[in-house]
Length: 278
Ligand SMILES: [Zn+2]
Image 1 (cartoon, rainbow, N blue to C red):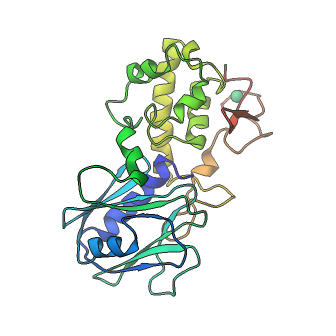
Image 2: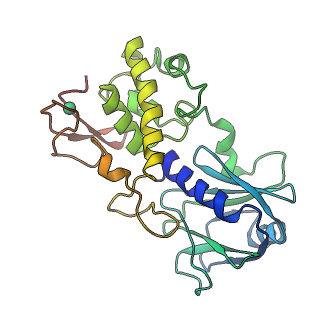
């Protein structure tokens, strides 16, 4: 599932490529993803609008339009943004926008957990209502150890499970939570309330730095596919992961002789080093 660095990489591309351009054609594929207000309404609300800019909130992409509306895209588990030019519609392509300069942008999603919504203001439609419950992102200046600590203190839940809560660490998913816990030297299955203040500080710092590194290397593309860059190529942060997807391999912390182990924590496949994570 794309997390903050992957969605941010796509956002930067889109903001560069389609800002200032007019939507001249909207096409839909044969299979449907969740769409609000349905294909006819989406087409009517998008046609003729110019994209003013592309923002991101957590894992949601937000296109600001000249008609006052917003197009919101959530990539779900395996959604991709691609460019197919004027090719015939691809098998898993759900929506294609064609711009005034002939460029196209497509939303592709084989597993169909993604969502496409056009918002007019007012109450958010159900498919994107999760946007209202997002907390601050660990890359933001205001994200502090005090904020994270307040969400962890007194909690019996595993620290990893709480990091996946979008109110606690917005934009973080399975990969970056494992990597941040490794950088901070904390076992993913620790009870959140047992973390000492120094550990909460290390974790706050680690969350911010691992997400920024992820963005710098254009996100993580694992072997099972899913996230790719808009031109179909892979990100490169997977080569720099320290534990995630590295079960049985040597820990990448300098001087540590540990071997990465995988275990389920809160129902999610979790990677950690049993030697340097306490
Ligand atoms: Zn280690």
